[in-house]
Length: 291
Image 1 (cartoon, rainbow, N blue to C red):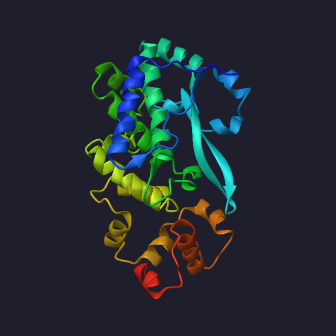
Image 2: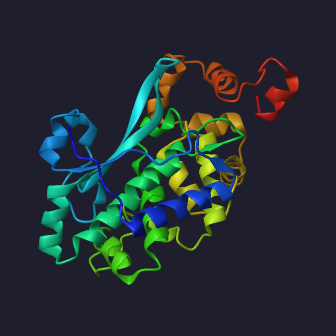
């Protein structure tokens, strides 16, 4: 049994503040609580969880996920895994080692890693009234640029009022050869998003969730744009319609969701029926989606 983490006053205060930001932007939490959080050595965690859950916990420069993890839970639906609320685990031995090597106080490392993993939970589990979809399928895709951008940005929001925490986040971000945060790296792309307001980012998150079946590269380019509506942005960028947009930008892993359906129009109908609950037989609906 791994050890439950005891939050500091600073951590709990900032977690509550972040949750309130989501709530003020029309997100909600049911049940109204934080996720389970644990703090233990990595080898003890492996005794309870599959090693496959830690595929991105490689020891590399600027990888906060080497020091902790958010593990979503899954159920099968429509032939694909639907994700639900997960748990957060901080790796005690790895944090202690990183502290010893970097000479950064453990409390600052724990804080930043916790806020990063909380960013995964917030962007994944916070629900909205419309549309009633919360990244249930797409969260399991290999869209790491998108997921880590939200997680790192959350850590930035939580750290920007404390120089020590902000310095720690800098150390846990990949660098260019000149020593700056690398905006092209998975854990560094968030630095291009700090210029946007929290309201703008959370509006964009709604779009990412709504169109979860699109490719990771589409999401990250959209997040870095000045647009808040992804289809409108794609249409303007590519001068095309919804049908062609999906054909060019569907995430490769989304094929499983479509039960092997090869006809593209059938895929579109599945999206409209399952994701949006729309009656795809009506002429207006088909025209709205460029079919």
